[in-house]
Length: 68
Image 1 (tube, rainbow, N blue to C red):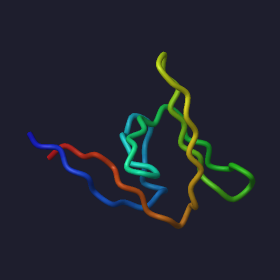
Image 2: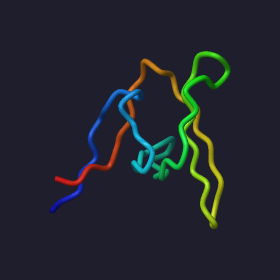
Image 3: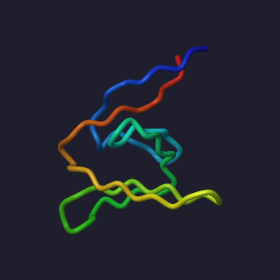
Image 4: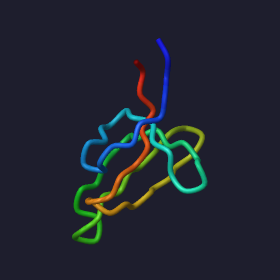
């Protein structure tokens, strides 16, 4: 099996996905807030090594690491 980055709509991201955010930094999605500031999505990584939150427009796209 191979892994590759695929561009998908923000609304198609699921908990457990690895996405690429600003500067190409990977983020493992542990939680998704779909009503961040009433109009945004927010992807949250909460692990023993870091906490990170990335807001995104619901009509945008994001790169997701997929296994084929």
